Length: 327
Image: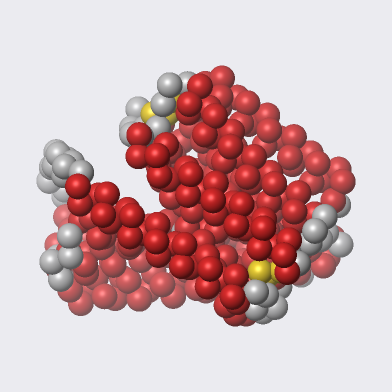
């Protein structure tokens, strides 16, 4: 039975990752068909798609009344995004940090991290009214993004790729049809929801089988699993030298995780916030945001290889603590 649940968890990861990819492609195509601007697509559809695995896992956990999974997934993903993903990426090539990220995005991430800790300590859980506060701050952040992006000049058009042949050419033709884009979006959404449910069910069984705390499973297996798309994309992009938006994407994902994912999940069921273990985890997530900010400032708007090595060491130290103390 254990091997079956492990297989179902792996299947859930695969459905989450591929489903999110199809959902984003389909939704972005529909938006373009409806003459929605690329700016709105980037700030809404793409932002949602990159955090769709975390959102579905956290909501599914909340619906099944497994709040430790929800909280652990959000906090663990934020820790992994900075210490693991940016750490690995920076080892390949220094990562530039955009000025706007230093002025707006990282301060908002720090604010969200402080809010998570403060509201969690206040009520020993994240209740539905805490979720409304998160969502209100998220709405204000999105408003600032829209307003700032409208003032910025439009980026240059990327070069057109070479014409495709075979299946690639057929897929390009189908992506121009509205009915296919709607089908792709619905199938992708179904895969994300189904994959998230499988992942939560499998993680619950494995935690019970080994006697591991649910929050540790959420902080490790689920958190890294839902961050796999960002990990693969960022490391490959860094290796190819395409690092311009790598840091901004990670920061945006972390903001989305706290303000939107935790905000929505807490509307379904109160999210656990233990004043011992969860508080330590939330403080580590806050430390990750502070380390990112300091590395960018000290590195003159870049995260260098030395900073990446420090991030990976901190990530390893945190996992040693989890497995040595919490299990």
